[in-house]
Length: 123
Image 1 (spheres, rainbow, N blue to C red):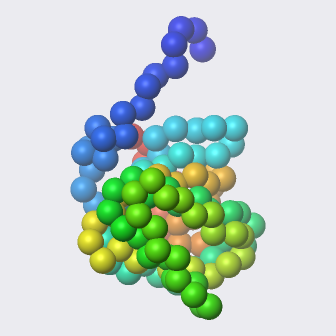
Image 2 (image 1 turned 90 degrees about the horizontal axis):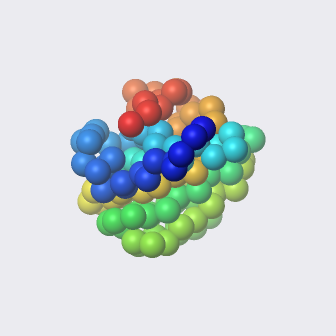
């Protein structure tokens, strides 16, 4: 690459889509994807057997339910869900998050359902 790398405007990227539970890839870092997603409602219980998953809340509030407890996140807070741990993200109102995951991670883990995204769109 020659020159200055592009600056990514998170606000502009978030404004470019409206669907929820459909992560969009915005950058790549050493084999990891940086994704944005809008969340609203309850997601499916799932786990990622071989990958950790990082959630960073940009706006709104996110509750991540675990079989033995709940984590509540607000803006500027992040949580790493360790590999193999079953969890369910829930957003009572629309929430915007940045996700950091190894390339190829499927958003629903081992579960296949209508919101499963295998290859996120690059925006």
